Amino acid sequence: MSILSKSRSLGLLIFILSILSINTILILSQIFEFKELPTPGNYYKNFKIYNAGDALQDKQGLKENGFVIPYIDGSTSISRLGRVFPNNIIFKPLMICSGFLICIFWTYQRKLFSVFSNNEKYLKKMYICGVITGILLVIHISLLGFKIDNDFYKLFVRIVLGLCVLSGIFSKILFVNNIQNLLKKNILRNNIYFKIQFYLVYSLLLILLISIVLALFGLPKSFVLIIEWNYFILLFFFYFLYFLSWKNYSFIHPPPNTL
Image 1 (tube, helix red, strand yellow):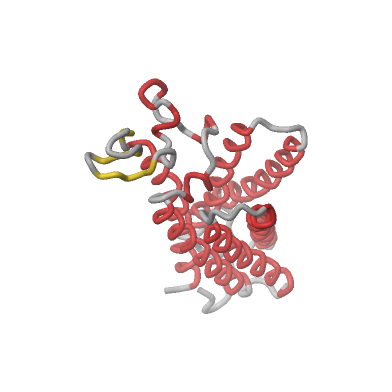
Image 2 (tube, helix red, strand yellow):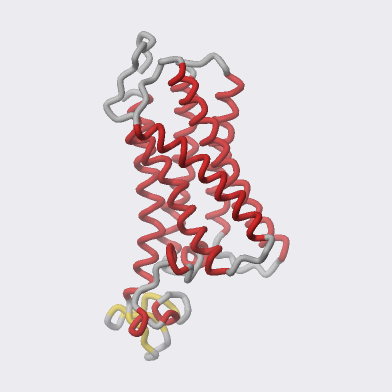
């Protein structure tokens, strides 16, 4: 299997694992009935799934208001939902796996683009930022769920997440800029997915900058959480677009024995 085929498979797998992880726990947190007996919690028949307060169903008034959709109502955070049991045995392994796959993915990108570019410093920056993204994602997800009442610890977790997002965006910017350079040289043939990737990446950067500015004015928490859930999807949608953009791809002037 060529590096390109492996990269496409990795991109699709990263997307599936990440989207599956958050949406699975979102659904599970709402489908089990809340009961007071024998002890308060959410049950499947007589088997207790969640302790009281760990699921969403006993909080949002499911019977009156229906299912919550954090993408549009900002009812909860991803980390809060992912760190409680049994959500954590689904969310954490899938996202940690995604983190390791991201490291491999960007290692492949460095090898792939080295065929077309002799700008090793540029490719090295892309590679390093991509690998750092995966490593920081693994660290952040691994730290979720530990009940440590320490301000430094909480700050550290937030910093890790922030650096993860920044390095992720920067690696993607370097990637799309590299694609644009190859398109201008007619080494690659353009397609709609390359274009969407380009606009997606710079939209992510713009949304992040706007969110930081708005945060200084005290955004409502629900609005912050809406941004969080949708931003998560967009970050990983990049990998799905990668899978599509290289499908049935042919080079205009392919170097011999490259892929």
